[in-house]
Length: 290
Image: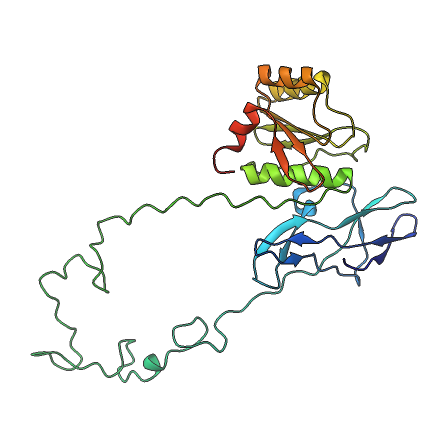
């Protein structure tokens, strides 16, 4: 586990201990945002998408992934601050590589006496004068320079890319539950998932919005009831959007029955951060690629 570092609140100047979260890369290696402790923390007054996520590169495989931006709530005054992170360093490719790698010069091109970019030492064919373009055979018309298929034939369709496995985030606080639900919705294909303005109340459900989506995350320890399911359905009906509900403690029987009638997907999240569908609308939303 990473060592806790002191972070001074810009509002009350109290120092709070903060431990950087560790996330699992697709290769299995742990990654964590590189904190920039030389820069002062920034008070969070208006939450935006760019403030919520940060790109982190795995030091083992080089994969770049987006994870929740490190933030801390002051234990004295309650101010939420964003902890600065070091920007990603640009990776240069081709340095010290062999011929044909970007950033290097091919020895064959350097030895071309004609300076025309053709193969070095190319000899004229039969009946061809030096410097003359090579003759094309009868089947060369309509082909590429490398003798490939005719230009008018379209390439084969690309193979659909399967959905990658969802990478859960361990839930320790209500904020972790909201971040996990946002990650999962983005994994399902929803874009620009965001939390409305205003500081969340720990004892109440939190709304998440995206184009065509209204979701509610219940981080409490009590099962979600009938009224909560009907409220999220009404919010989705007003916005002409899909309604989704996430709960840590599950649902009452009448809430599940009402959700099935209204077609509302219900998910349960455990502390490992892996949402599980609990009704048929949720199975349909996840789809066969899960």
